[in-house]
Picture 1 (cartoon, rainbow, N blue to C red):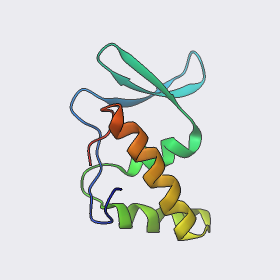
Picture 2 (picture 1 turned 135 degrees about the vertical axis):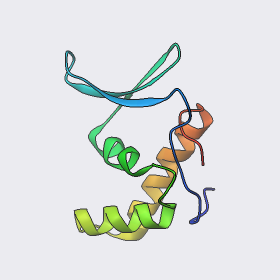
Picture 3 (picture 1 turned 90 degrees about the vertical axis):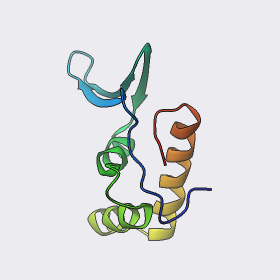
Picture 4 (picture 1 turned 120 degrees about the vertical axis):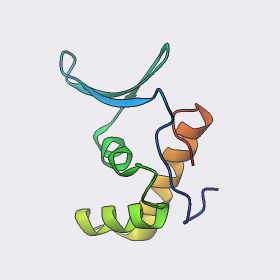
Length: 90
């Protein structure tokens, strides 16, 4: 479980990049590539280590006029999955 005060960020060596040739977004890491969908891109753009999880959820809920509880569940699930792969640090 990721706490509301966690400040997620991409670890050193991991980059969010648009692959214009294939028209998709990817997370690049040494010897690894993970395709990310448009929703994940919006979440990962906010994972700068400055914002905490609560702030990220509030931003997304306001921007997309969505239920904060649902946003929080989706953000936590994505970040937990990427943290297991060492693609996000919390």
